[in-house]
Length: 480
Image 1 (cartoon, rainbow, N blue to C red):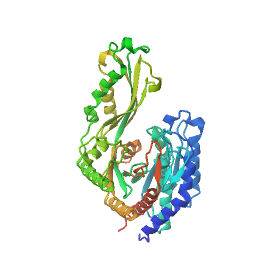
Image 2: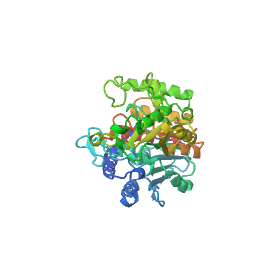
Image 3: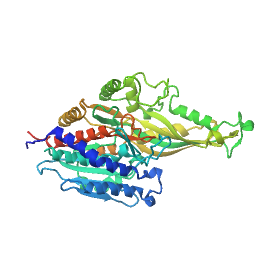
Image 4: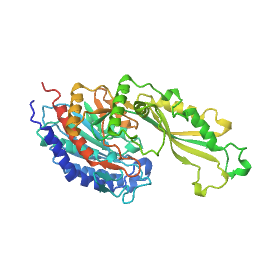
């Protein structure tokens, strides 16, 4: 099946459509406060998620993609999902590519710069600032634009299914039922690409090959029925915070950040060690002056060197205290020994760590033999497993290399991502023979989940062009 595909024409077409059609869509999408269900229990009555899904579906329906079937899947009690089913451009082309994204958003967060806001999109230079545009509103339109670009440049594509769900920021609790409902329609894809990952630099195509899992829950230590004067009880009644510190010391080494629970630790495979060295070298070349975090001056990072820090973020367990209760703000705090301390923990676990075993071990570690007889509870929430990619098929490795060099003028790089996308593990288990990967635009300055989240527009355009090249390569993988 010879092809007259013109790669550069596909890239140019993708960028042009981005500027003309995708950017206005994202500006409109950004104004919708469609919080993920964990952060808006009243999401069903608020209607914001339905508004976002309908907006994306209407935009997709208006695109010039022959044969595309667009649907908003609404199951009782679940957030809506947008599905676009696109037939192959040539009936002789076999195989299905499943492209994944999500439309739900994180909470607003404080600290947005003057003139910016989570629901007030603004374009400054080459960035669009607003909540949810980089994580992950761009995914669905990018996928459709890539298909259009392939066709416009004389290329081919196999069947493409685009799925944008509405619960990812809550750990994708609604996704299994949505996937089960769509099982017959999706079929058996041979490539799954999630457009919801990171890009440590903007100078190449970063392909995510592993993701950590996550255990989320709340540790509560109670020592009193109510608060009492600290002058009377202090030094006699152990403080709830001190007990919480002792419990956290069971979990991690406070000096190094190393996790001490064996069930939460896995040694990285050899390919991950190799990829960590490559990633560290690319980061050093892109920014030799500092880490890719807004650290305060003089802060000492954990890890021995760049490669070790990559492994710590991709394959080592870590603990973060992300919220607290039982503590008044300093301005309102009196001389009172507080009755309890609650700490919300997010514990990242290695990609190949069993989340159920790890969750049980975490609960035992925190609740067994409470110090000083305090009341200790662990309210376990999310327990999501990680994921590690299978070796790339030769055609896909070649396609990714070509796409990165064409669109970014650099070879691709492998990324071990410290975050979690439960969808990846589920799809790997459901489709054991598929090539499952992730890519995305969450690079320097994107600040997903925090203030001033932004989408780097040139990178979004280049990634869309790269996706177009991969789709054409998928169609031609069986050519002689």
